[in-house]
Image 1 (tube, rainbow, N blue to C red):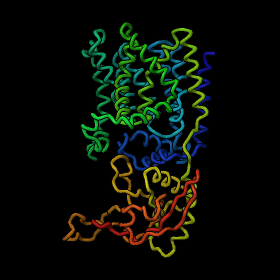
Image 2 (cartoon, one colour; image 1 turned 90 degrees about the horizontal axis):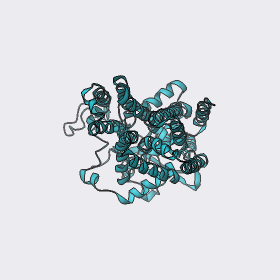
Image 3 (cartoon, one colour; image 1 turned 90 degrees about the vertical axis):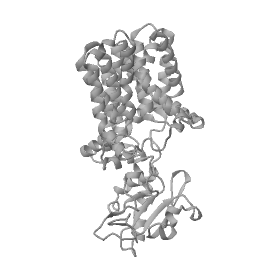
Length: 486
């Protein structure tokens, strides 16, 4: 019987690997695929860890669905083990076991286990860091180094993970029992590892004018967005299920009461508090982030589990919550609609039909980041993908990584002498001048944006493609790209 939990975890992981191999690639995963081909220490919306992990899977198994995702079901198993270790270290083996079960019952956890992204690795290494911090307060320097290493790894996937030591620092300041850590090297070693690991991403953000904060001001930071906050809370309820949210709130309330007397609930709340504050800040600004949500609730799940195992009525209530959350997870749609793969397949014949009469290969323009990523992935896997790249319609977009990717208005170096009247252009030329493109959108001809109508000599309707759910996508032939007028 003692091997049953391990066998169940292996079975679930195998099932998730199978699902990862057959589920269609989502736009978010196509985004990770594009980032994986342009590895860097950071991107406009996150550190570079998820892209590197995706690239490793692609190198091992190719860039099909399983290659993109192979690491994430395995990291879900690691997160389950980490939840068990943390629960056992704080409250005993039974709490650790049921905490791992509760974590796997959450829809957001299961979804993150099946799709490429930063959520699962940030959670797995974050839980391991919390476990190592608990052990470090009891056993000394080697565990402090391990805690710093795990925190640094989690921070490579989510910036907020670097806040994990804040609760430990507060505990060492406020607790007479742990103030001795300031006279020992362990805490300083852990903090040094976190800071050193964050330097490459900090330098990248500095070189790119801090894009993660470029759209905000102190006024927007201090002003809640109440309308968007309601939507973010609704998404949180869907990601965790309403019974699980209520159980977590009840568990946190009872832990706060117990923390006045007992040290272990106080330690758990100290570890969770910085992440919960960051999550609450995001909610108040209408920012719903699954990676931050999972990391913020991952530690409280252990505490809530300990509360629900205290008495028989609470155990029955906890079992009902687990059943409802698991049922919702099992019956919800496992992925979003894959509407762009058939579009990419239909574009091949359309391009071959339109290409005659154009000297240079046509390129594709998508209307938004999600379409750019999805078409970029699917079209690159078609016979036409090598010669017909997909670009975003807009120019630099500070809200995401698409602003760094090549655009159809990029300039490249040339040997041509600089024009004395246009010194800002320098020795560069636009490689797409005179070329034609296909623009995909649901906009009618009279609603086409100026970034399209003013950038091409002629824009005319070419075809209409059918999408799932009755949607239609219009394709426009955009001829003779020109420099946009100022």
